[in-house]
Image 1 (cartoon, rainbow, N blue to C red):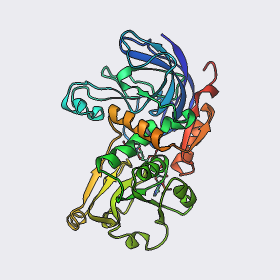
Image 2: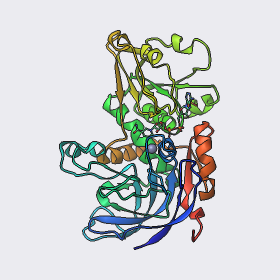
Image 3: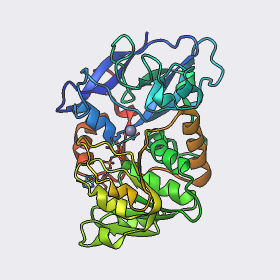
Length: 352
Ligand code: NAP
Ligand code: ZN
């Protein structure tokens, strides 16, 4: 059994430190890869800080990471040693329920259901994620990284990319669509690029002005700051789709519903913790919908990677060392990251 160095935390204060973890040898249909780069998603922070419920510590997060295949188990057909590979939020599902057969492995309805990259498995054993030098995964849950994608920058596509691509695709965004991306962080800055590549007229709605030049560089046609009085009122009836990636509580959801055109949809992917209350007339008036979306299935994730490679969509990342993860968490929460931290695992020590 290979033993590798990873970074984990022992409690909700999220002080990261190196630790030695055991990784299983690749079994039937499994591959082992040397992880090169792992993105830090805001979901890692919600999870590790216990904001979504109890966590088994020590926790090694990481659900958007890439590396190079180093070993293949018996029966592997899709990967060979040396291939560029990526893993996202899920590493297992039954494969035979209606959801899995429809390509929605993230919504597997069998028991125990979808196996998330770093949660307890069916026996209750905590699994470890991508802030690690190595990872073993079923080949069916591993993605091919197209050669056009910059390897050091592409890891965030495995979560931020698919989470924004999937709803934009589902709601048929294309030429003539007016799309607003609400919140331009890790998810949002990729969502802007994807919506633009799909042909939409793209607006960014941010809580300040500081990201305007970047938004335009990512392809935004318009930029609005909610810190300026009257912004939301001025946007009434403007958008076919609003993609909300905001991680914080307290948004004016009714105001955003009013910013939709008739039959428009507000798609939330952000996961702040407080419940939301909306008057029903926010939907009735204009025939509008409030929807959610959660990452995407495996086939759609591969489709997204190929789409990003074909259209030059690439995250803007800040590379950090293992020792910088603790500070990076605070920076993400304070919206100081531009736009995704990626951990370079070659900076990890040889031993814990
Ligand atoms: P992030 O990089 O921290 O971006 C969140 C953005 O929200 C910030 O850049 C900021 O954008 C905005 N924001 C932050 N604090 C705010 C505040 N107090 N008021 C208004 N806006 C604020 O996070 P992320 O990694 O993109 O993740 C975003 C959310 O999506 C998280 O809740 C995460 O858990 C969730 N998520 C969901 C899925 C899914 O499948 N549904 C997948 C991944 C992540 P501006 O500066 O532009 O305002
Ligand atoms: Zn994520």
